[in-house]
Image (cartoon, rainbow, N blue to C red; front, side):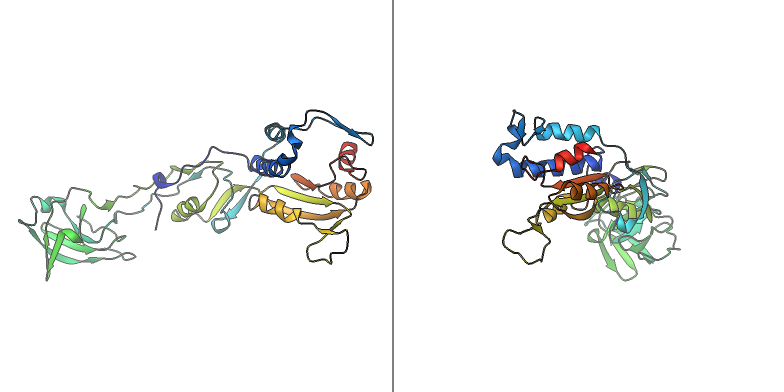
Length: 318
């Protein structure tokens, strides 16, 4: 099976995978908070000596995220591991595909001129000189009123320029009756008809889905240059939180938001969970400082106006 370049689905214009993550996270939190009108408040919130700026709408937050996004470095991965990644460079075809004139229908390879005037009432009789199957070298050469029995995917015999499908033929011993006139080139996939050597198959910035992987593999490309996945560090905070599977004592709840955030991010990034910070500035700061190699830090809780919500002050002080 192969994929023609023209059959590939239309891909969106190149979008930074970092922005995609930002959109996912922002829209997720919009769904969580919209019922409480958190994104619609116009007044500044002041409590316990804290001052919060006007909360941003989702589109404003996305704009701020986009302004701070920088390009990620590239890396080489095997084609088998490239699903869900973003191309860092154009993919250029290293060869013609198909690499040989290929039979497109089961039937008989012929010289099209030998079928002139053929019809059910006026069949043209050709001598069958052999057969050609996929995966085999075809050394046969057609001359004059001859034909070769062929299967889909087989190499075309020399001298043949078209294929008569089985339904327009009738086999009689070592001869075949042709019941329809066939045009030159009919039912043959010519060399390079899918893509030519040196032609761009996929452009830089393309998201690699199943069809793109199929096209790359069809060209026998074993390695692909892709954008490195963003590294996302996740920090939860709260004295009430415990890890999944822990004993739930009175006043404790499972850190379930961690799994929701990981599900939102999906396969777009590499996630690293750093643990649960206690409701203490030093505990929160220590975990944030351990995120030096991360591209994005996602914090869960600690950003409201309660007496133990220290995240705002900790980040502001760093």
